[in-house]
Image (cartoon, rainbow, N blue to C red; front, side):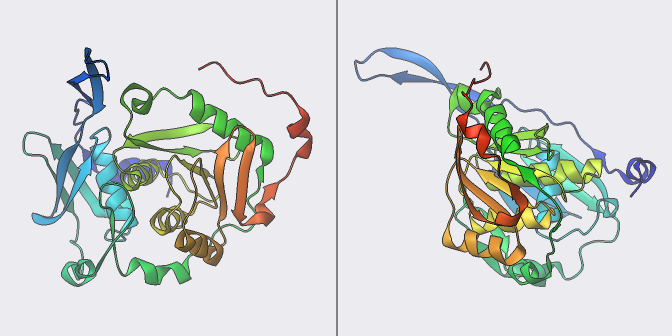
Length: 289
């Protein structure tokens, strides 16, 4: 889709704002009182064409993008031009989505759910598992070892709610040269990945040469969503699960876990990574936090 078409079909979006942290009183081990910040968490009930679909527990930093990404990754809406508007109202903790032609067979398509291991009780509609077989990722995309290190260092120095209040997950989208395109935090990593999917949809960004980073585990849900977005590289500072690894191998995704400093474990898609062993002998000069 051209840039002109994107502007023509771009849905009408609210610009809902919410406080991302909340102050509470605490006593330390010596009984000393202090005030600390904790992440906000609020429900967001999604209504599509006046039909209640799901309630997402979210930090609330990017609710419009989260809603779009959720509909995209659940394959309930196939293209951005099918969405007329997304309007978030925090006064009632709800978002109203209007589509051009409705969602065909919505009851049948949402009847079977799989509760995932994502923080905050993530869930995917069961039919998504069947679509894994049809996903084809780029077989020409390459990622240099030095770019992996640049990504890890960028995340380390990124200003974040986590550094201020903890208890959230972060996800980021990078170019294949290590340029940070989007960074989103939420109470569950599945929400953060959905928000990035929504932002990509709005801007018409394809995933074929992009790199996705998450602070959380590489579960099957994360791998499936990354594959649906067409992204061939998935990085994490954490580990993976057996099913996450299985899905990555099935779709041909490059999976890098335990990314910290100059260490990583390449678990799948080895053919895409360009090793640069000479970088290991160079002194590591961390960027300023």
